[in-house]
Length: 168
Image (cartoon, rainbow, N blue to C red; front, side, top):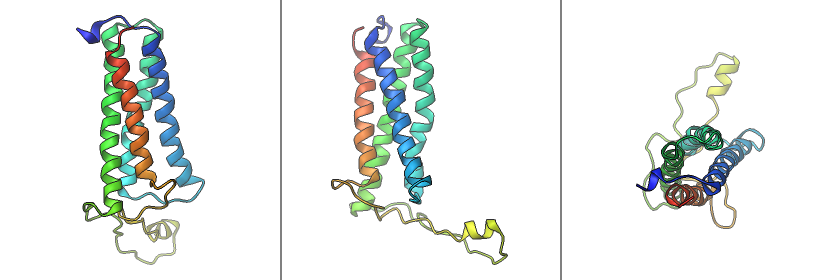
């Protein structure tokens, strides 16, 4: 069976690339939010979930590969990373399609609960209106953040699939 073949440097390098790639991608999104002031919409936040799950798993998988864990475990982690990035690819393409008006997004995206005046910090936080999912916060080389997430997810998924099934 393919997943039980011995592992080698290809799998270790792929795990490192996935761990770094996932961390940098979600870190960039968090940087745009917390340093540059971009407020994420509902779909933006959902796109981060595969990275939050995947990055620590890839780091653990790399540690397992270095510790000479069974090939099935290491290749299984690579496959899990590839599947998580496939999920992220779907989320990115879906969100980009919503932004381009190709299909409708969730009806609750950008909605805010009524704010009651009280003057507290929590009340002021409730007054921040999240952006609508159908409006890109910006575009670089024609792609929005969701579009670039789809590109990153495609590349990372490819690395994961190739390394999971490649000989050592």
